[in-house]
Image (cartoon, rainbow, N blue to C red; front, side, top):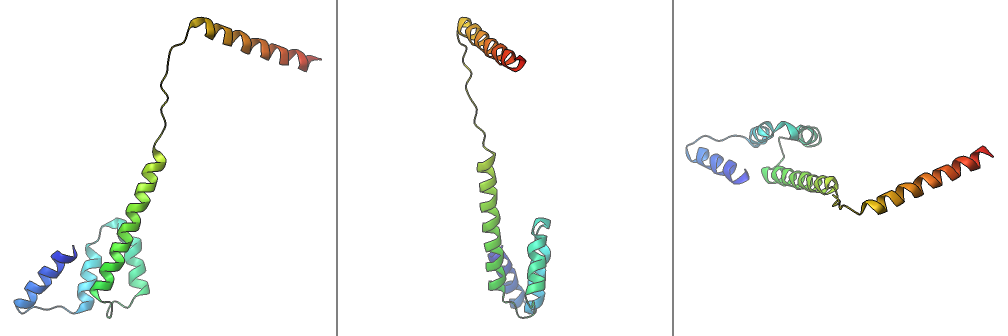
Length: 114
């Protein structure tokens, strides 16, 4: 974006049309997507747009973009889930497990009744 913007501004200067720095900064801030609104608000409130150099603005925007990408990568890593592969076991072992479970639950029931 920076190179395209600079190319356009230089071409306009060659044609005799120049813009003040403040207007260039405002044009860049206006063209950012809505997801950047909090960053735009911070820049507008914290910085003096009439003296803010374009290089400093682009540096701030690139830093913010890098931070947003890092946060996205962290969220994607957190969302990965583990899938377990199911395997079919012998029905006898399932029945033994069921009997053992019922037996232990019955023993607990009997203890609670005493």
